[in-house]
Length: 270
Image 1 (cartoon, helix red, strand yellow):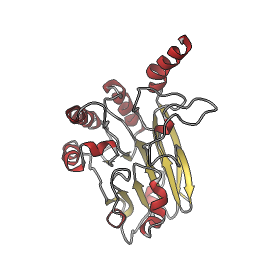
Image 2 (image 1 turned 180 degrees about the vertical axis):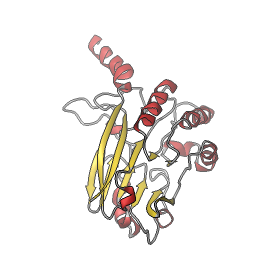
Image 3 (image 1 turned 60 degrees about the vertical axis):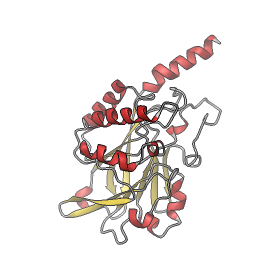
């Protein structure tokens, strides 16, 4: 019992705060020269502030700012659905966006997660906009450099909604297509759709990497929509999928062998 208690304490107070910065090179076919070396930071699943404390999110933001990215992607679950009431989630979301406003990179975007559907995009969108963070829901925007383009897209959360891929992905993109989609297992549905074949890279979260990983055992819990693609990089034909382990925790404030993650991608021409 003493050993179990010590392990729980380690998972809650130490391992849950052992922030990991993962660096990757992301090779994109026909990448415009203007985007060679373009740096993207991804964070996901903050779950503020149940159980992600304000001081820990500030630490995450300081780390992001030290990386000096060109683009910051936030792939959903800014708050938690339960067990606390809706008014707690509303308060937590306002506090979370106030802190996220401190991200120095001016080009930053958010996508919806399944827990965020507790409040809904119509309520969250204007609050994000007030802190200069556009919330993309079944839509796309161009990112331009020296007259050259990438297309950034984001679906609605695929666990609680049915994404509209016709609206999300441009029909005839004049540059590579990057997609934010909270639930990684949606990649299979995406690739079965004609528009999905235009996507070069998909950025997801949702799974927390399993959150508690006891050696020689499977992850303690994987949510619906995140049971096939659990963490890290996958090559799915033309498309690359990356599943970020997230910042926060759900269920219990524990992480073990699965540290919270900031991912840094450097684009290069394939």
